Image 1 (cartoon, rainbow, N blue to C red):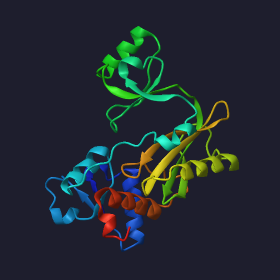
Image 2: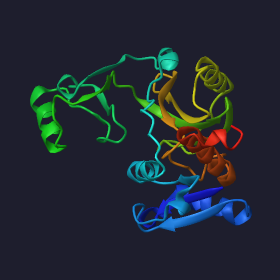
Image 3: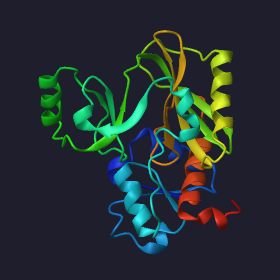
Length: 247
């Protein structure tokens, strides 16, 4: 099982986790690339990219694969958002939380409510008001966790908010997390559920992240080897390699 990253990304938590996993398992191979376009095709065969959206997309092109559409808010999980979330444009986003439809097209932000400040915020970010986006009611999350899911099972959980350290998910919250997983019957083989506890004590879905280009938190319960195989599982599904791997 081969993993690749770009040299500029080789010190990321994600690559460090995969590299550590490979050190402990000789069935895993790692390689750092200087440039995807200049890498021999044979070196990218069945390779799983670890890194940025741009890097993963470049590897996908080299492998003749099509990147999946963003899955931010899957229809079966909309009831777990606990807030209004809809498609709109940046022009409509005043006072609302704004997120791009296209992965990482811009940094998600809470748009100012006043008309003048809102227009200035778009200018400062060099954003076209007609750009399509997700807009939602603002919610204050006091604790947030990422649950790494593979084949409908939770592999590990990591707290990623900057609030109180080691805030534990309650048994009721964990039960709600499992309920979300069961509700999404046609989910991909590997993805991450970002969930959170609000300042009102409510447990809500924050968003969903696909099982590629998704961050790794070393302080969580997901082991490096599990993270590596989680990434490889989803990439194989995206590229169609899972058919050759028995998936």
